[in-house]
Amino acid sequence: MKKNYVNIGILTVALSIAGSTATAQELPLSLQDAVSLAIKHNRSLKAASLDVAVAGEQVRVAKSLSLPAASLGAQYAHYFALPAFFGFGESSSDSKIPYSRIGGRDQFSVIVSASYPIYNPVARPSVRQAQLQERAGRINYRGKEIDVTAMVKQTYLGILVLNERLKLQHESLQRNQKALADSRSLLAQGRGLRVDTLRAFTSVQNLQPDILKLTYAIDVGKLQLTTLLGLDSLQQLRLTDSLTVRENEQLPVEGEVYQHAKEHRPDLQVLNLQQQITEQQTVMAKAQRLPVVSLLGQYQVQSQARKFDFLNAYWPSASFAGAQVTLPLFTGYSNQAKIKQAQLLRQQSDVQLTDAQEQLRTEVRQVVANLRETFSRMRTQSQVKETAKLSYDIIQYRYSKGVASRLELTDAELALTTAQLNYLESVFDYLSARIELDRTKGGE
Image (cartoon, rainbow, N blue to C red):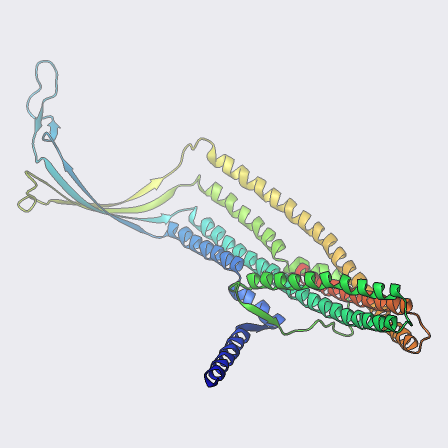
């Protein structure tokens, strides 16, 4: 018996440790913490940051066009017959040029060469274009950051709404369970109708699938949030913020929103940069028709030997330095095509920017209209919810005094639950519209 008590104690301690471990694995998470974690660990943002790094390396590649270059080369060759040299001796009677075979079958040479482009008209626009591309990459990253932030807020908000809906469904279930118990008691006393009991039982059973659906939806929402945050899918989250709406909300003015978005939207900024990039492409295409001036230098050591005996061979050296000018005379009309292509791209970017600005005007109007509509609907639903709660309390009091019927109480309970859910939906729509407004404006 004592041994059994010991085993029970050990089992209790183990269960408590396991329970505390499971609780410790839950990560308390506020909305601000969720946004910060997403910015640090979101996988799509990490991929976008690598694009920025690639663009930065492209700047270094462009700068190399103006920097000196050096190379080291070595060559070994084995001749199966000695190398032939023409012009030795007198010409034969048949006008053939005589030749002789001299030297070694094994030849080895080492060459060090260097070049420095003192004038390369393509270098400067290439660097400028690469820098603009890097800047565009950073702005694109900021745009992705804004989108990820909006998705995190929307997902977090959705989970809070689901939790509130689940809470309301449990409250409705408790009220209906109490109504079912009262109906059964009255039916047993002969003071109630069987149809009232059946109606109450049906209401209770109808709430069970909704509660189960909401529970699964919360689990899926937390998994989606975990993925957005870049955390392990097994990480359990505990949301610490609540669903609240600030009082005295100031609704934005459409013109101010449009002006702010026009100046701060990352996609519009990228389109502006695209115009500058196409200008540099035009400059680069025109520069390819200009000459390139370079300084050259080379130092060479070579030797010939028999039977690979380079240790006892001579190693004469040769070196030179000079300048080189390269002027493209004809490139198959490729330069003309590149210039025309760059000009067409500039026209295309102008059209895209104008179209994006017009679409932004429509988007801003839609977002502001949604915000105003959801704000008005939220205030209306708040009043309806309070009215439904007052109505339910009155009918419940009258029912307890035997004045109201069970059907009136059931209808009042359904109206209260519907009003609460409608108010919750209006709050969700309003806060979602707020998130969309921030995204449309290009972030705060």
